[in-house]
Length: 129
Image 1 (tube, one colour):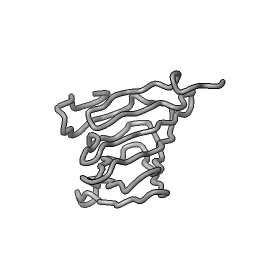
Image 2: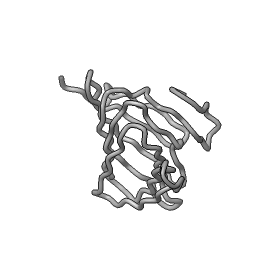
Image 3: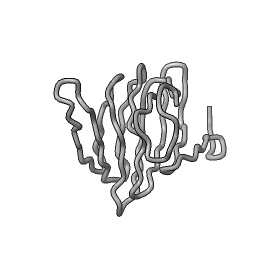
Image 4: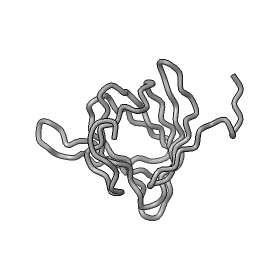
């Protein structure tokens, strides 16, 4: 099915916005725009499996804390790099203070599967927050 720009949902977020470019019973695709200096909530997904691809970077990716040592892994990602995030992995996407970030995210279909652990914008914490 052909979609034009007006058919693609635009979802405002306190850190930027998302566009749902594909959503089927098994998979989804998002375009994510994070404004400079902003970050998404620290979160994990119970079932959702996804991969992010950096269209315009750099991106600061926080992964963890891990169960083994409680450390948060800090990963600097550049344009053209990707990272696979499995269910249960705590993560946060952060834009640097001097640059917007554009991401393509491809994953399973559970778009509402979010367990928010921390949020800089006062949004509710917990399952499907």
